[in-house]
Image (cartoon, rainbow, N blue to C red; front, side, top):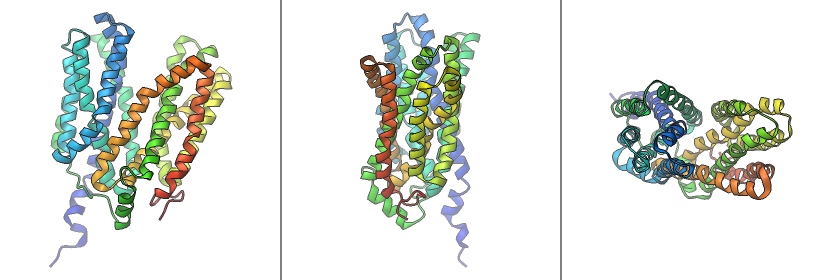
Length: 406
């Protein structure tokens, strides 16, 4: 007698593993993003201990970010040969090992080597974890991917705060070994517990597979999505570059600048979660038009409102600044064939990370040329420039409430 349909191997293996894939991916995202932003808390310590100038500190940050961006694509290709679990576990070990080596370094060269190792390890997380979540959830992945995206902000908040506390209680080298030990523990959990995600998991209909094949990783749909991601990141990083100066011109005290940025980041974390949910209901195009339009409006309002009202608006500004990203990440799988999911994420993250590194430099030169207010205007105009790209993306969406092909 044939087994009932609901007991097929794919159903038995895939459905129970969904929560485990999601939460292990969220754990990896929180750890790796926390490692990435932990550098900011360590730079003053390294400057004091090694006598580094600001150029050297910029090199340290650039080594980590540059290595992580450059190795996204190789990490995606490696996962196709070794599997998601092995590649993510090895990457997590390397990310932790880099900080352990930093704790033994004696100068700038040692720190550069250590951060290159850690950044290389962290390059595995985005394409592999997000690819696994998207495959296991299929067309229902937008909501889970917004949770995954939100988890990175938790790590960015928790680990820099933890390392700042630890270095007040013990030498910074010992503190680094503790957070490296945390990474080794997470790597062990991933190696032992991360489920095997079938390449075709979650792709439920032939029409969806055919649409993904037509869009392809390099098709016009993916190109529009990629361009939106690059510009959205540029708006966010450009505005954050000028926001302290805008608030300073309104008379904010130096002590409150950190509070103002915290309000933006809190709103940003909420935006990643809420807008991912919103995108699944309103549709990608409508949500992108809403978030980018509201971003431009909030930027203009912060420029002209008095300080008290501008501070009150900052959480909403952060929500709009970060909200688009969850919608975009949830759409990447739809623009790629199932076997190219990691590669599509790798390309997308490479573009957004590179944009995050380059755009502040571009806007900085623009600020020197036309002033802070003029450059801030440019960030608002960049947000509005996303509108035609969002409309160009619409025909490539297969099951989007905002008007893709059905």
